[in-house]
Image (cartoon, rainbow, N blue to C red):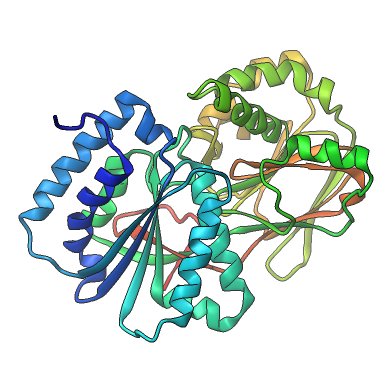
Length: 395
C-alpha cells in the first residue's frame, strides 16, 4: 500500500531528482547528507506530513521529466534519535571533507526537523569555520545547507512552508553566506552543587558558551516561553507556544522578578552607539531585521535587528501581547528598537537566555553577557527574486 505520510526514507528518495535537475549545482558533482529528525512534526503530524508528501511527489515527478544538471554521487540519510546527534553527524562530515583528496566535489547538508535540528547542524559548521581561514574557505567553497520546515515554528528554516523551500531548488536562485549571532559571557559558571543543579534544570543541551543563533538570541520572558514550550512539547506534541505566551504574562515575573539591568549597543567598529538602564521583559538581537520567532511572530518587522521591551504591568502586558504577533509593538513607548552589531548586558539576577530555541540559565556570576553579529559563515540558498536581506551576503 502506498504510504500516506512522509518518512525520512521517502523524503530522501523523492528529493534526489529535484536536486539533480536544479541549476544550482549545474555540471558539478554533489554529495548530500540528509539529517532527519523522525520525531519532527513534518513527519509525525499526519495532516502536515500528508501535505508535505503530496507536494514532494508532485515536484519530484516533474523533475524526473527533466534532464539532470548535476551528478549526485552520494545521498546519505542520517536519522537523529537524541539531542546532539546532528552535531556529531556534521562533525564527521566536516572531517571527511577536510581529508578528501577530491577537488571537484560539492556538499549539501539538508536538515529535516525543527529549530533544534537546524541549530545543531549550523552551530557545528560555524564552529568549524571560525577555527581557521582554511576551514572558512572550505565551507564557503564546498558546502551549502538547506533547512526544511519540519518543526512547529519554522522561523529558522528556508521557507515557512515546504513548497516554499522546494522552490529554491526548482526556480532561479543563488548562493549567499549567512551571518550568525555569537553569544558568550565573561564571568564564571557557578561550581557548587546547588547552583549546578539549578543550572541543569534549564539547560536543554550540555554545551558551554560561546553559543550561536542563526535567527534570534534573547534574554527574558521570551526565553522562558521557549523553554516551557519545549518542555510541554515533549509531553504533548504540537504547538503550545501561544498558550505559554498567555501563561507567561501572569507567571514569568513570579519566577524571574525583573530588576534594572544595563544594555550597551555597539556598531561594527565596536563604537558605543547607545545604552539603556531599565528593568526589562526581554532584550534580543537578530542576525538581521525582518525576523520572526514563536511561529511567525513578527518581533523584528523592519530593518532593525535590536529590540528591548521594558518591564510593564500585567494589564498592559495582556493588552499588548497581540501586537508582538503582527509587529505593531514597534509603536509602543515601552519598546526600544535599533540596529547594533554587538550588545553588552550587565545584570545581577538570574535570567534565561535562548538561541533559536536552545535555553540556558544565566546566573549573576556570568555577566557581562555579549551578543554579536558574526562575519558571514554558512552558505545558504536565496531566491533570485528575494527583496529582503536577512543577514546574507553574496559569495
